[in-house]
Length: 88
View 1 (cartoon, rainbow, N blue to C red):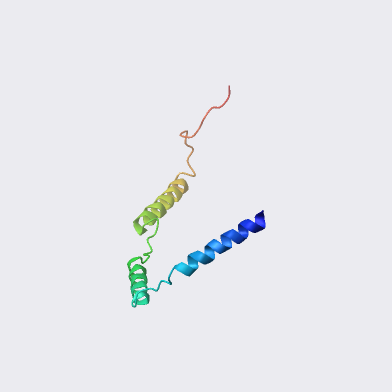
View 2: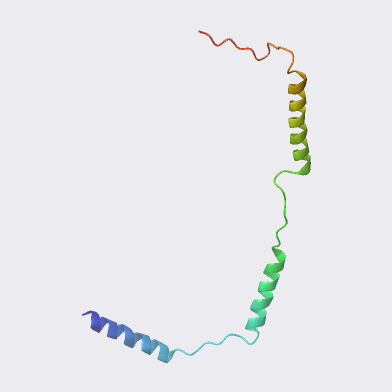
């Protein structure tokens, strides 16, 4: 059963190819394709853009330095600002 189906399909395919003509691309097909590739390649260039700008890094760095200076200047004094009573 399977063998006869394969033979029928093969005959059908052979008939289809016998009656169809071979298609050929146009004369300037390669030139057209290459020009399209070149235009696509030029239009999509990647530009490096950092996630955080220099100003943002400067603000972060200044904040960290300010925290270090604040903690250094207030290390000798006893402050009750962060004194919590957690007893129940």
